[in-house]
Length: 122
Figure (tube, one colour):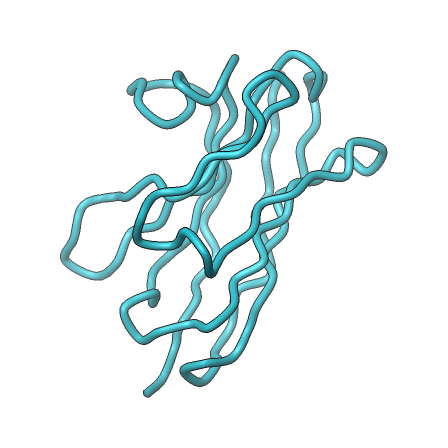
């Protein structure tokens, strides 16, 4: 079965950088996509990025230009490099897997990992 594990969250100051990792198992990266979501306190979950071999990469406007998604298929791991962090980036970050980026970002199913907390202080 599909297993996902997000890690790398922590406390940083505004303007600093942080890299999150999503370790995956149980499927081939050649046939699936992995996306990153976040949920801030009191707000709805927000999809922010996705990567797949067929779709390339995708970013929402809220993080485009600051965050970079990448993958290391040999390690079965997807990364989210977060630069120029802002207090409004504070959230629990989750990774999700599905057949492609459209399904990952917009369908109400797929496989989820546990979240990792990112806190950005001003």
